[in-house]
Amino acid sequence: MQDFLILGDWGDTTTFLFQIIHAHIQKWSVTLENPPIFLSLGDQFYPQGVHDIHDPLFHQNVEKTWKFWQGPIFPVFGNHDKMRNSQALLDYHYFKKWNFPSAYYLKIISKCKMGIWFLDTCVLDIEQSCQLNVPLKTLQPDFQQLEWLEKTLDYYHSRLDYRIVIGHYPLSSCGPHGSSSFLQTFFLPLLKKYKVQLYLSGHEHNLQCISSIESNLTCIISGGSSYFHPPTATKKPISLISSQYNKWNVLFQAPFVGFWTMSVNKYNVLLTAHYVVITSETSAPSSQQVQNHHHPMSIRPIQPIWSTWNILILP
Image (cartoon, helix red, strand yellow):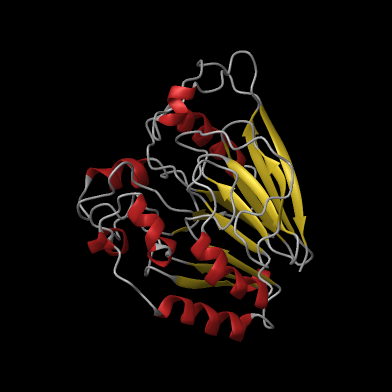
């Protein structure tokens, strides 16, 4: 069995929300027999990324925060990571568990018969990145990324039991950012064609699970770590882009902050949402806090109550 932590948008490690999540991740990790793998879904450095490989944020966010972590960390770029010197995230090697070889890459987990494709969706969906004020100089167009994705999916799709793709921007979302029309138009057909089972993303500051009605694709959003923005309260199928590929069903939305984990064996993949239950002592955000995109949501410093929600994925 191999366990994974699925977490994005943790780039402000000073918020109280992140601290309660970080403590629970530590408790979860010590229960495992083998070191887990950390799938980091982007926005590792709020608010403006880093200047260079010597930026103090590397020490604060990576070396200090994840000192306890025993397994490898595999990141992707988020839009905040692109604000200054995104190349520094690739050049940084002072923390041996940090594995970021290139803007997009593939990892094969042989014992699980699993392939994980890590993508730079900030470059793929340049329109969304520009709307988020990402500097154009950090968004060098890479027309080979989708070609590489299709070639590698074509080669491995019959050789692997599980195919997982990771990017920062969600395909479909009920959160404030919403869905990506570019990814649904040009990217989703590849996932459908090669029977990708999971697409993992962050960007939205909440936890969601949305499934495709027309394929076996399940989308996981795990961005409710440093901040929290509640998703839209709906359980109805959503169709956000006029497309034959865009029929979705909302399976789960966490009421508060948390993270996802994944346990893989030769029979199935178990995805678990770990989230804090809202009580009278854990107040929901005000409308002003929601409008302020990166205002840390205030909650009272009490012992949080945790709950879980599971979904099983078959080969």
